[in-house]
Amino acid sequence: MILLNYPEFLHDMSFDLSKIAISAKSERTCIVSIGKSAFFMYEKFILARQEYKNCKTMIISPFRSAAQYGSNVETTVSTHPEITEKSFIAFEKLYKFILGSSPEHIIVLISGGSSALMEKSGDPEKVCRLNSELLRSGLPITEINRARISSSMIKGGKLAEMFPEISWSILVMSDIPSENGEHLVGSMPFFRKDLPNTELFKIADSDTLHDEILRILGRKEIFSIRMFNGTVDELAGIILQKMRNGTKDILITGEPVMKVDNPDPGTGGRMCHLALKMLPHLESDSIFYALSSDGMDGNSGFAGAVIEHPEMKPDTSEINEALTNYNSAHLLFKWGMCIKTGYTGLNLNDFVIFSRS
Image (cartoon, rainbow, N blue to C red):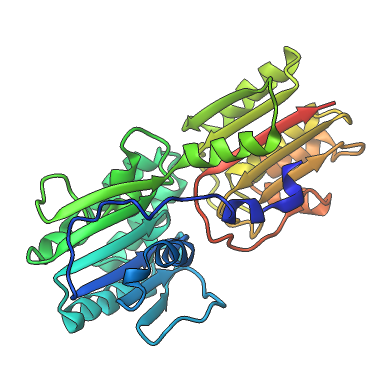
């Protein structure tokens, strides 16, 4: 099955960046790469577009990379999913980078997670508090990012608006499973449709992940859903119904939402919570993977859950208690049903696979 090379298969997906018609050409071109996939996107871009390899570059990521880059590349580590002091520092560093480089053209490589990595506000405490509330709200990511835009001084194209003399080319790896979701990735500081100095290219999204998993699974008969953005409970209901109807193979990709209404939640995320809800219904002939492509399911520290041919399970009371306390990862880990990868460097939504022999 797919876990034989998870998360390596994510890195092997092909992205054709060589034919993207970036319109602005200038010797004074800089690169900004930001998001959970910041290093991955930068390396893929430079590999495909060698003419930009010596450009001054700033990379903003939630983790450090072991890769070695040239002296033209500056890296900054910020925080995710919470907006913290580091988020505001990251913006100040980027602002100084732009002023110091005096570019005519900036190529932006942006992926999910950028909303938390960089921020500017007249009321930082209010923005941090709002972001924390939004993370627990159970709202779709489109609504969350629109709320973030309204309270920010740089999101929603406002950063590009600060520099109308610069041409901005935005390459997006979208983690928002909806039509035109690429316009809201990272609450999009660098692009807005009404700004004539900005252009946007979508290079990958949830469908990219879906198609790759379908290819690897090689199933002729498989029930699948793309870009799912309903609730975790709704997703569990769909899967359970299909299981009861005798469906043998299921693939669902997207980003389900989950409202955390416990003031003191435990450890877990959407995928661990979903897996624990499904666990009582899984028979010994089945496998169930519920994983985040970025390798971080909520605050769990795990990529999600891996349940293969379960012979023994926690009792119902333990499961219900963990679900009530949003402590799914703690219980699943206790039973050896979690996988830890660390950040995969790629962020193209969650994926769920069910199969039985």
